[in-house]
Image 1 (cartoon, rainbow, N blue to C red):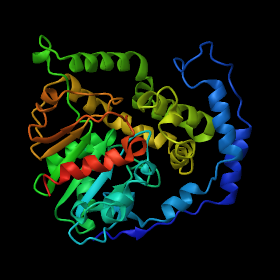
Image 2: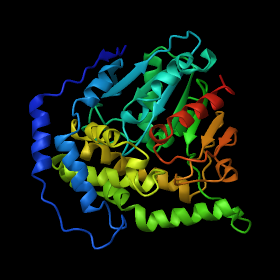
Image 3: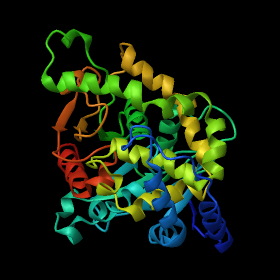
Image 4: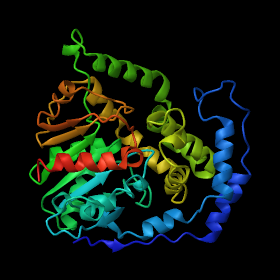
Length: 385
């Protein structure tokens, strides 16, 4: 029987000194010949951000924030998975597994764990309480880095099912975003009897060609957004899904390069009105970067694209008969892509019982709109507990 082993992050001062040295020694490129983000992160902003990271940011923030929570390593199918497991003080709480994706991290959920596990401390009801389980994807954060191929989304979903058994949960719910949407969908396909419901932001569903002669304005906008993303936003995915090792050298060796690669996505994918720090505070952006820098996961995190992006792309280009019958809740934030309509989503998730489109928020909902995120989970899981 696999047993969780306690985990504690202990960052050496020499490692932090090395980070600061590398930031200060960055060889900067010429400035962009445009006055916006259309060619990537503007030089002036990245220099300012990296200067703050080197000289003002509290580099032990992540160590302290994680240290305040119960953390474990659990060996699941040959990979050590880093897990934050916070049990609610309310005995009737529902176990809930939260899965994020790239370029996010466990940091995305740190501010919502309290309201989810102990709602009465935040003005809520004990009937909405969850036992929260936050596993980190293999190759990400402080989970182990697989030394062999094969750790795609199917295997991760199977590992999550095993994890909930190890933790003693026979019945549970699941939420996912980004890669977590794929993992949670597969979890619902393979652990149907144990899952009371899944919540997705957004659901992973293709446009329905049968609707193309009768599109709503929102569906037309969603198609336009998919076309724009393919032409202008998906270069990172092509690189990571074809040559993750190649980009990994830069992301592991250069903190400023890592910052550019990741922060650009916080600009593009968040509801930030033109600047990422309008959506996510600077220190939190850097907390998230530390979750990639400290464990050196530039290459290993990118490998999930090599393993699984073609499976995900097939879901968008081919008909699928792997229908998810588990009760499903969907939240579509306005700056999220993709944004399938409900009728598109119901082709794959025919048991949608909660559908919501908040007024604000983007890809990193738990960071951008934590109160909305918590409310959405509570409202959906009230229907299926």
